[in-house]
Image (cartoon, rainbow, N blue to C red):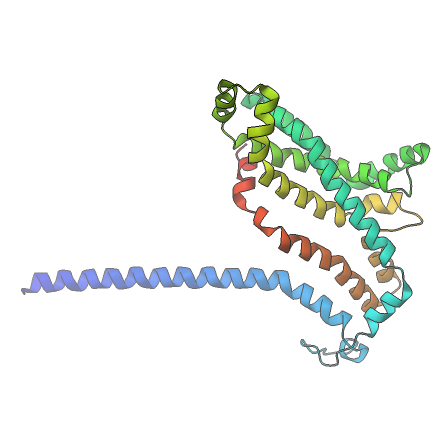
Length: 291
């Protein structure tokens, strides 16, 4: 082998090693970014759980330990013994579930019509729908609460559901419009050719294909309603939701019982997200991002 061939072989090996080093470096940076993101999300939850099951002397100190040193269920027992958590838990669950179901029933037909409009008109309609989210919720909640007082809807689940629908319907319509856009129109036309009318094509072809998008949108609406605070402050007087109860405990200055309440607020969200996580895929929401 002559010198030029050896030099070319050395340069080729150098390029391969450089490319491999760059690939490993990219993998390391990607892994580091994922690890930091997971830590950023999970560490506050772990600290919250730690406060709820730690003795006061482990928290109310100048240098509290990161891990749980003196484990105790006393704060949880006090919260459960007080008996004030089950009514807010039930109220939040009922309201969030009805908001998710009604959000699908109301937004899905409208989103189907919007998805079949011309592109320019479709964009304008979606922009008009989302323009309602430009106003602060505090400014909207006050006139809504005044109106609901006249209608007798204050301190009722129906009033809270209607108020939450104002917040979640634009989000649901946006997601469902992208879902229906991802379904080819040729499938509807093929169903019409096979003898189906418009309603049958919608029920037998479009609706089954859009079930995953509906599930993903309903989950997001459920979570949005579950964590909602502003409307609940105005519309809940006698029976509060879990976020309001947590806020009341924070105002009272009892950190440990507030942490226990916050954990109760987080557990149903984790369960719902874990059970239905297969529906929360980017493919189901990607159609809503192409406007």
